[in-house]
Image (cartoon, rainbow, N blue to C red):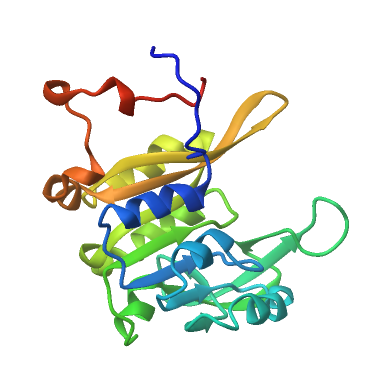
Length: 231
């Protein structure tokens, strides 16, 4: 549309969240579901906030301890779902080395399952919460959202990995809790076909109250503020 060099580098999760924070997005605590060995973007942008970390794979725990040694955090060695109970965890590797992905299944290693609103409801960590979801399993992200209903009014931002075939369903579930899509970053492709990305959602009422989070206006359009990732 308007040819201009893209110097903003807004295609990374950290850059997107830094912009949101600088423009007034309130975050009291970070909820990180699917930490694996550590979420560098959340550590970088919110080093001064407590992190509630959810990771059921024991192999990742030593790396988590190192990554968060300077971060105030609580670690929960369980898998989040839409029920409180027991389940099983299967894991695998794309390269034949250590664990690269794990998912709740009907068999495998016994693990505790919990609803997010059960855990956060008994926590002393204060909101507003930034909720990040990056987990394996086709229906796992939807179950996590469904298990967080009671705390959704206290969530200001959701960052979720979105696989193409489930994008619309998951986005719809999040939108029904009062959120709107704010950014899409870190798109991934397989054989030149879109596979997944990270999507950032912010509460609709927070955007309405803060013009800095949604500055576009036809009445005051400034061409100098326009840029495209294709430039």
